[in-house]
Image (tube, rainbow, N blue to C red; front, side, top):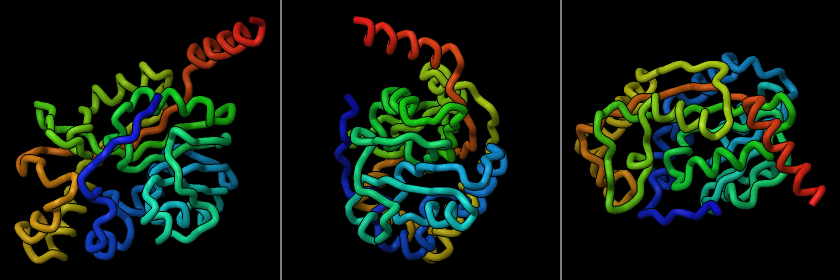
Amino acid sequence: MIQKNEYMIPIYENEDLLELSGGSLHPGGDALTDHLLSIAKLPAGSSVLDIGCGTGRTVQRLLKLGYDAYGIDRSEKMVRIAASSRITCTDAVSLSGKYDAILTECVLSLIPEQELFLRSLHAHLNPGGMLLLNEPVRRSDERYVASNPSCISGLKSTTEFSEMLCRCGYSCLAQLEDDQAIRNYLAMLIMVFGSADAFLSELEGTCAASCPKSYRVGYLLSVWKPSCSFVENQKTIEISIHEA
């Protein structure tokens, strides 16, 4: 069973960061989302679920591009701000429905049981469906272990990230590293706060506060599809259950 994680104040609920980033708390904003969609070659009109959609900026972008987009977020505050009938306050435990694509942006590292979460998404993808991921990855050699779970302590290296997806029954269709996106994002935040010290002080009391300042983080865009062997195995399991 996927367990909910308890944080200090989640960084994505920091009102100053939300305002200064224009409502997009993932590096690259709309441009990187558009890039991921172009890599995936997802046809207009496809149904897309944005998990961890926050205030719904990406959902609105997807609708503008002609997709049948929906979002879920477990933060009541974010869903209130979104004020959209297409966005629901819930989490992966209560996920329902099937979609042509499921999207996450800066979400996986916040989930304690990442593999269980990824495996659960198979049941919510239509045949031929894809998993679209815009996610930070660890560049530092050592994994950061925090006393309080955070988005940083949940990071994996690119190799670990890919191996996890393969274990969870997915095949990679495309993968692109874009570390510059996260550098630009951090530079923008430092600039709008006036200094690095001012930005870091803003993180006090959030889930990112205890992260070592020298910790190196990159960014990865990737597109995945359920592997044939995993799908066939699931069908066999379902048939066995029904026959029993």
